[in-house]
Image (cartoon, rainbow, N blue to C red; front, side, top):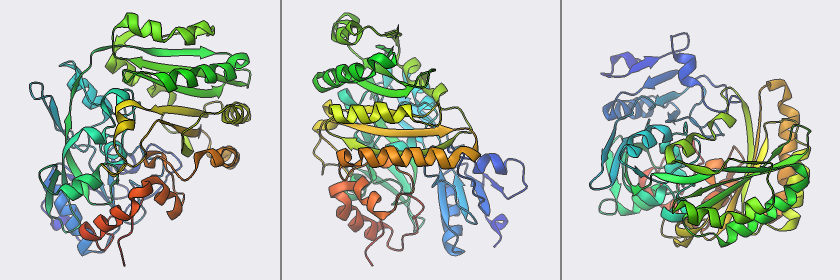
Length: 443
């Protein structure tokens, strides 16, 4: 098994090599796996060579773009890791309002390039996230109410298939695959490049208001009213977190892309309740995209549970407030991210991402620094999830999903699951790409 005999532009790393431990590391510090080989791909031809080598030698294959997925599927033991993080080619066409980006680009990389022209595409809300995994799983963020999810703004995806063939999927070519790539995750091949639609976005009215524990429930009720009636231009997210005293406090973060005066008027209910701090102000969209980064310090242990809420009732509010007050870690929280507007109006079968209609992505985001504290933090997360489970129904956002079993994977893909199975059978009949939220082919 001599990968050295393959002509490559990138670098091959083995255990003990300089850079090996950094390359195998992912966002979730709970994941500690040791691939036999890491190929730091320099270009698409390296990806083709890596896929061919792994298939020829029956090696497990994983793909790392940003490495942000909480399940840690980007890395496995004793296999080949294709590290795409150095593939950062990025070209913006401001006249056509499109960008073509390689698979190693992060949200921060993309924002830096597009904001130079006053443009953006909807992505997530943490700038070090890799665009690739986010886009293939959906991509919910501040601009989704106005412009849809990241996957709704994909124009084309270049892919290396299990056969090592290079394929382009778009509305004009391989339309069935293009449908599946918009929400079906990494099940169909190694995505090496994305072409995305851009929109005019410059200054926004954004930031957060925070409320003390005594107003936590009232703040969530005001948030519920604001979110349920908000225009496409206004997106609002809520977070229930630990206060310094150990009780549950609430913050509500917003982004409004219209005129500041109009936004201020819409936000009157949030301010009328009397927050203890108010950081909502005009800012650049890029600054907003980086605002949450500090809440995810590197090296943290992560264990997440989530589900879609279509109704944010008082009973759910009580469970969240009471549950967060019991969290063992002061950096754990429950987040509510709004899906509405343009993202909600798309038919569930138009893309592989099926969870449409107004709703909230409710994420129990448990994080802590010391591995010795893992048992009690995991137990807390599971307990709160069990309490909230009846309100989620059979649904979950695939980009928040850990290793939770085949039934949860089916819930993530929802009513489009069987269609995705048929696509998987066509494009990856041996399930070569299975280190993901996996869709097994027929047979």
